Length: 78
Image 1 (spheres, rainbow, N blue to C red):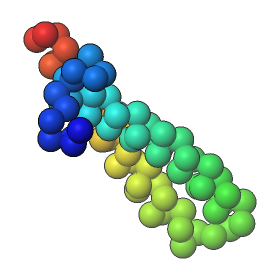
Image 2 (cartoon, rainbow, N blue to C red; image 1 turned 90 degrees about the vertical axis):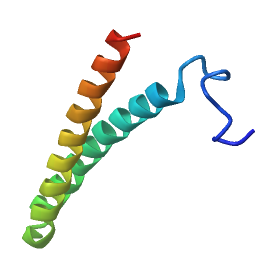
Image 3 (tube, one colour; image 1 turned 45 degrees about the vertical axis):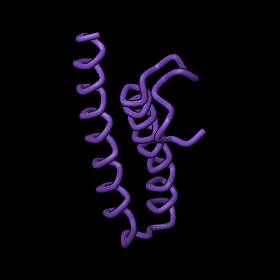
C-alpha cells in the first residue's frame, strides 16, 4: 500500500487529521529536544548556537500552536 492510497482505513483516522496530529507531536518534541541543546550550549558558553536554537525552538512552538488550532477546528467539524 502506498501513502497515496491510505485514507484512514488502516488507522481509523483520516490522513489529514493523522498528519496534523503527527505534525503537532513532532513540533512539540522538537521544542523539548532544543531545550536540552540550548542548555548544553549555554553551559559550554557557545553563544554562537544559542540564538539559532532558540529561534528554531520558537518556530517549533509556533508550528505546534498552528497545528493544534487547525486540528481543533477540523475535529470540531467532524
